[in-house]
Length: 383
Image 1 (cartoon, helix red, strand yellow):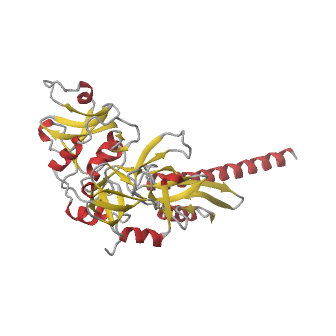
Image 2 (cartoon, one colour):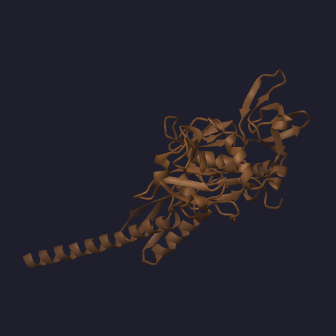
């Protein structure tokens, strides 16, 4: 009898061990798919859970990538396990599109006002609404950045309404301005890059804000969006001229507007006003464009300079080279420093932490260097 009990115990142990190994294989596949498809959780989601049953598994959770979901299921079926797929592919909402309706909307890493500010969108910026929770929505901005925004900052719409907005008469704000009502009272402020629908133009333009508010702005502060997209070029002189208009602007972690900016938000602003959408963070921006030698002589105006921890190669700061050894950046405030030790504005700290440089001018289209005119959230494909 004792030998039989021992044999049974060994058999059960072997079965449990085999089961654990099988479970480990499945969990490894889930982790592998996430690593392959979502190396950067700032721009895509893949949060999948596995429930193990006797002879099958149940997959739950959510992702923004249908391709990743399909790849996972295909891999798991090859292990011989029966898969019950309950993964949600976001967005699942009928009104999955939104337009930023306040001058500057704050994007946070959690759905609460006290959460960390990670980015911003400005009025007229189109966003995709991935899901909603309480009074908040998880959105994806045109730069692919994913964060939470309070619902009071966006107007949601379905596919038809969004397509109609893209085909409407829209103008871009080229100078910070006020929208005023008929009595001269403020309706809203508008920062550079704001997109408004315009009903009539003259010395004063009658504009319609995304949430239906109406007012007027000075016509010389706006430009027809189609004309702007057709004529804007990524030009060295224009980049410098745009950048110096931010001089003295205060630094704000997560800031991306002409009210206040962080380092990468400043770069986004400069390039957006020259027709291009950049990746959100400095650690992302370094992955695009042409890599330039780490020498002052190799730099050209408009190149982005990246700084950080030389030992770890971790990027924590970005600036734009403006020529003659100088670069402009947001550090405490928007200011100009030099790479030349003989200059009064030389920064030993920045020079010692200089990691690399990337050239965007003259480079091809990519996710991190996308012309506004080619982004499907701003224009309809058949236009």
